[in-house]
Image 1 (cartoon, rainbow, N blue to C red):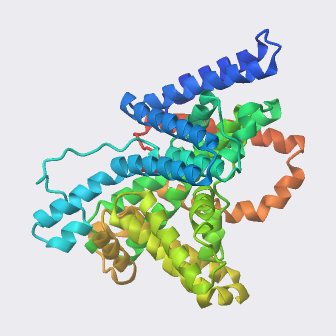
Image 2 (cartoon, one colour; image 1 turned 90 degrees about the horizontal axis):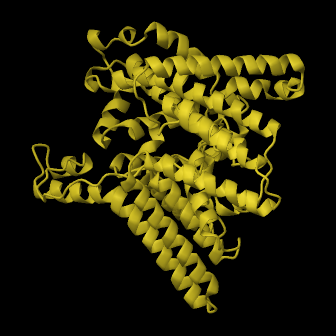
Length: 494
C-alpha cells in the first residue's frame, strides 16, 4: 500500500487515526493498559498494511519477528558469555540467510546460468548483466517489500540486547510493533530499538505534535507526487532512449533529473514516515539533512540516508575497529562498509560498483583530498564537486548493468547526440516548471532561510501561510495522484 495512493490517504489512514484516538476516550484508568491497547491496534493495522502486498510477505515478516524475539529471550537467559555469543551469532545467521535467500538467490542463479550459457556477448558481459537463461529451470524468487529494512531493525535489536545496550523485550506484541510499525516499515528510516524502547512503553500524543506530523506528511507527499514523479518522467524517457545517441546536454539532463528524483522520492517517503510517527506520538530520527549541499563526499554520507549510515557505523564499522587501528586498517574498514552498503541496496553488480565507487572517493578524501577541500575558500566549488561525484554515482545506481552505466557516463563527456534525442525533445513545459524549484529546494533555499524561518515560525501570519501551503500541496498532490500513473517509491525495491 503506497502512502501516495487514494486507498491509503482516504481510507486506511483516516480509519487508523480515528480508532487510535478513540482508544484515548475509553473508560480505562490504567495508563499501561491503554498504551497496550493502542499498541495492539497499531500492530493489527501495521500487519494489515503489510499484508496488502500479499500474505506471502506477511508470513516472512512474522517468521523474522518470532525468530528474533525468541532468540533474544534465550540469549538474555543464558548465563555464560560464550553461550550468549553463540546464540547471537545463530540469530544473526538466520536473519542473513533469510535476507540472502529472498534478495540474492536470483543473482547467484543468474551468474551460474551465465557461465553455463554465456550468450553472444561472452561470459563476463553476461555475468555483469545478470542475464539468466533459465538453464537451471529454477523459478525466480519474489523479493518481499521492505525486507532489508525490517531485517536490519531486527538485527540491531539482537546485537543491542547482547551488548546490554537495551533490555530484552518480553512482550511479543510490542516487539512485533517495533518491527512492523507501518510508517517506516517499507522504506525506513531504519529505527534502532534503543531509540524507540521507551516510546513503546509510553508516549505523549498532543495537538502540536499531531499538527507537526500532518505538516511533515503533506510536505513529504508533495516532494514525491509533485516533484519526484515529474522528474521521473524525464529521467525514464532519457534512459529508455538509445544511450549511445544521447548528446552531452541530454545525458546531463537525465543524470540531474534522476539525482533530484531519488532525493525527493526517498526523502519524501522519510518525511511522510516521520510525520506519521508524530501523529501517533512516536519520534523517529531524521534520515536526510540536505545532502546535496555537502562540501565533500564524507559530508554527503553524514547527510544522506542517515539511518542506514548510522546502522553500518554502529554495527559494522566500529566493531571492525573504526579508525582506531591506524590508517591502513581504517581504509580496509571503509572499503568493507561501502562494499556491504552497495550489496545491501540490491542484487546487481551496479550496486556493488556504486558502493566501491564511494569507498574510493572516501579513501581519497581521507588520504589527501579532504584537507584541500577543507581549506578551499570558494565553498561553492566543493558543492559542485560533491554533486558531480554523487550524480555519476547515481548513474550506475540507476543503470540496468555496469556496461550501461559506463556508456551513459561516457555520454556526459563525449556524447555527440542525434536529432531525435536532442535535449529540447525532453524539456517539456512541466520540466521547465519543475526543474528550477527542484534544484533550489533540495537544500540551498532551506539552509539559507532556516534561521529566519525559526525566528518567525511562531508568528500567526507565518502559521496561517504554512497551513495554506500544506492545504495547497495536499490538494495538488491528490489531483496528480488521481490523474497520474502508478509510480512506486524507488526504495521499495530494497
